[in-house]
Figure 1 (cartoon, one colour):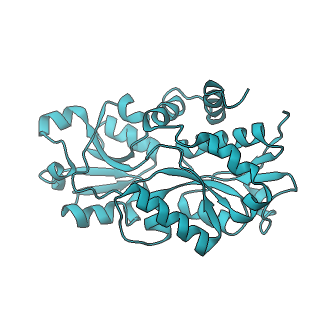
Figure 2 (tube, helix red, strand yellow; figure 1 turned 90 degrees about the vertical axis):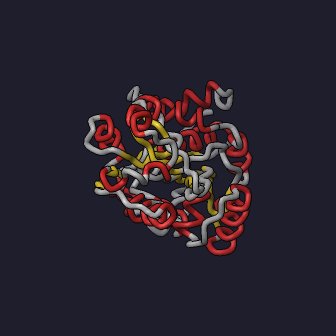
Length: 294
């Protein structure tokens, strides 16, 4: 199959506002601005192009949850990948639920009722938040859980992405649940964050459980012993009108259901963040290795 892939600059997309799809046979996929999202956008896009007659346009990755969700909800784009816990707490503003199936069922129902957006089948990996420290510190401090960290928290600096410091399922909720704060918090990009903990500029970072830099930087994930962080199962979310017009998209994406576990996603992320491969190359290699595209 000959596929057409269009990568447009942000200025070009501004002119497209108000259109649900860019063209008759084209759908637009957007994402958030971090490695895992960008890899998964290309995985979804190439799979759709391989198994349908549709063309895929990739939106520039504009930021965090709000731009991606609002862009799809407003009809500017057709499809993106969301996490169950993010949808539950940050978008729907619901109370914390620990059971993964209950979270998925609730967000699936509410997104359809409130926004006419459809949650398809989860990819398989649970990219929950974690607190992470250097392994040598974990050993010398005798720290295994987040609660253990409370004994030293006032002496420690937390490096964190800005969104984590503001989200209810991030630092504010963590403080309420565990009853301690860090002596210092520093907002920083994830790339800087890992360099900062490696170089001793901060002592603790928030990390995603599927981040390939955790093993690469010899870091220790602390057990969330009070089960504060909700499940964050990654799932494709598509506009209902797009799916109705092109049901073949759902059929194509179902081929990825349960296909990517945490270890595999960590491996794919590491190929970009550590080995400096291109997002799209990693995505295409994965699909070929799994026999999902030629």
